[in-house]
Length: 528
Image (tube, rainbow, N blue to C red; front, side, top):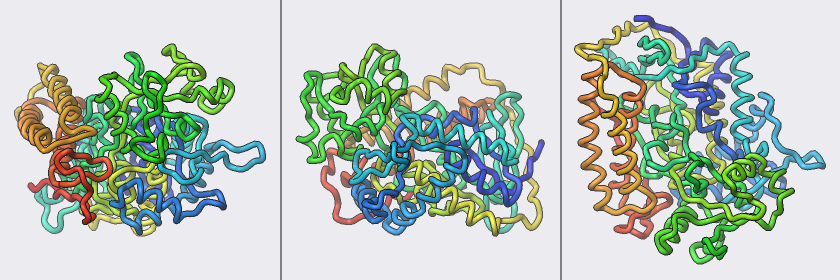
């Protein structure tokens, strides 16, 4: 079996992965793998922008307070302040990559505002901020000397104890599958950095790309890492509702610039749920829309930004305007139909702001990590800020004083045993569909003990079936993603069952009040 050696092994090509790789490139050899193309990631689909305090009238303390309020005070105060205060350095990193953020005619930054923010502090590049950031980072990556490998999916992390090595258990790298050739080989490294994003695809309706199957979280859990706060899955309140509009978001910035949530008759309804109206945080807005849809029996609610006029809308939101128009919706004269959809994973692999996890040699950065920034709900546009800051802090920890092997550990060749080529792909697609449907029905925006118990029972059965399938047949990308998706589903359900209160994104009819005691939900990693 081929073994590729490197000083730093990065998994994922969103903002967290690319920035980690670029910062580490000056310290040693970096290998970066991504299971599709570099740009097939959540970062590329981010519309709104990146939080960063820059206005003299604003402050880091105000940003931190907004973050804590949005996160239902579950965030870790020290972490929140640290990440907010380092955001300007992250913005500068993107500017150095060539990102041109929007400016005012007088040359100042054109900062916008989104739900839950008390000030304008969102850097943006029109309404395709993520796409422009991703493109700039990819251009820089290709000049950095990083060995990047597209269409390469990680099968499992290589752990010292699992392969029979004496001494402390630690991560030694990973087995990977080249999707183009079918070759399985190992990447050996004393420093593995997971930056794989979230698990939005665990739900039937999501605005996430197909790559968001929770791979990093599942890999870390199988390696024995602690997992934290997985019950907090954010549902973006405004996904375009149209039969042909696959996972297209109407950015939070649209409400930030004056859009109001209304019913089909054009009547605003948010004020009866929250005094902040349409600018309330996402968890409140998503539950309110869900409540209105159930109360009225309507399939969707609407955004109304007609008062801004066509000239303004085409200039400020050119991509969103054009996309809506392609479906026969003119933002300047029509209400925009919207529904909530699974969006962002607020929990994940328990990690510090510098990426340290409970496993030696394994770091986690970005959406797959739970640093304590988001608490029970993410404040809009804090995620890309977290990715930038934590990538920089992780590189600062690993770069000057990297972990080194005393001697390169022998990694056994991948064994296929009696596995045979799969002959019934329909089994995989059926199990994939069943997991996503039961998660949507039983573990969605509003939960109950009974729904969670039903989900837990069925997911346990499905995981046994998936495990049997995994060992019976040769691995394929679809099988690997299904396996990871099922792990994440079970982690979400277990975490939700442990939290006996309603806080942030976790709302349960059995415990509708928020508990006085603030606590994190921590699940131990798999024991083998």
